[in-house]
Each structure stands twice: as structure tokens, then as C-alpha cells.
View 1: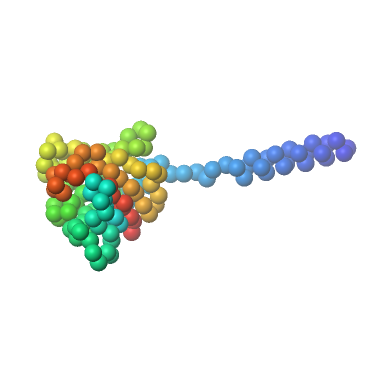
View 2: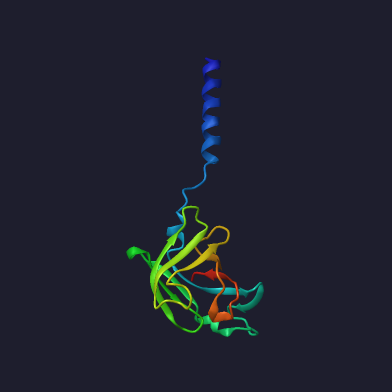
Length: 152
């Protein structure tokens, strides 16, 4: 009898330990980023040029930047850039969750053929998305830009 009690106790302990080690179900990146994002900070060529609410921003026009990925219909994007121009198209996430690609953008951003890509830095959360544009941005003097985006 003691042997069965010990066996059941060990089994129960094993199940308890195993269940406490499980990771919670996580949402796919494509669902996590389905929000309206605004800029918290921006670096151009590794130089900090904008901080949300900052008094001494080098480029205040980043306050206009918005990346709206919230529309579920065909993963539609509305991307408003620093000169207050809004581009509309589609967005996809690469299979390895490391790239965000905006396609079919209308009007077409200069030199883009309607496509702009960003590297996703780290793991997006419900409130923060870190991106680096993969090509220099003509609107910012051909700088390579890093964005820390926030929601709300």
C-alpha cells in the first residue's frame, strides 16, 4: 500500500512540476502587431532625432508618423510618414517573424516600387514594436531609420 501511495505521490508531483513549466499560449506576431502604432523614439543613422514628448527633438515631424495595421481586411496598412502623406496598401510578416513588408502602397513612396520593408527587432509586445527600415529613407535624407513604436 505504501508503495502505491509513493508512486501516486511521485506521479502527482511530476504532473504538477510539468504543468507549471508550460509557457502560456502566445499570440502570433501577426496578431500582436495588429494595432495603430505611433513613434516613441526614432534614430536616424544611430542618432536619436525624436523622442515622444521631448522638448529638444531634432526632427519634430516624427509626431505625424503612424503605422496602422489594425484593419483585418486583407491585412490593410495605412502608413502616415513624417511629411503627413498617407500610403495605403497591404502588410505581411515573414515566416520567421523578422520582417514586416508593406506592399501595393498607393501612392508609391519615392524609389520603392510600392514596397517598403522593415526588420522587426526583438519580440513585439502588445504595447511596443521595434522596427528598422531595410533601405535608406529618401524623405529623411537617405538615412537608415530605427523606430520604437508604441500603442497606445
